[in-house]
Image 1 (cartoon, rainbow, N blue to C red):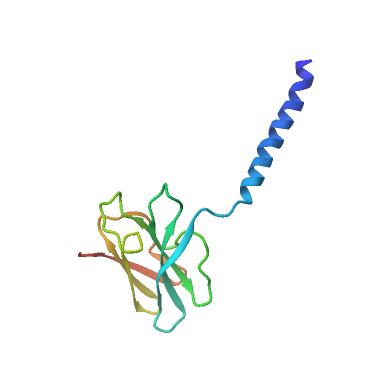
Image 2: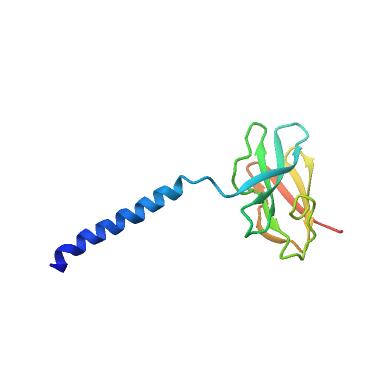
Length: 140
């Protein structure tokens, strides 16, 4: 008897797990991006978007940087160049709630990103597409 019931129970359990996953996939993203600064390259072919990403009350805000082409929208995803947080209060935070990041274009294909040395870095890319990112620490 148990041998005949086991496949039915396993099938039902699988359907419940699948259904729960399907329901969760329809929920809105709990994170949101708030733009802090947008800096265009000298010829206007690229832009750097500095934004703060918040994912609810249980996580601290992170400052993130996305390097985008001129017509590319900022999506509700993490930054593709730089992601950092205040390292549990070790780095100072700006009015937007995350660590300061300053972006300056050197030329059309090089951007300089500056941040506090005590910030905890989760992502730090040297190149995205045809644009090089260089980094310096803020002195204050």
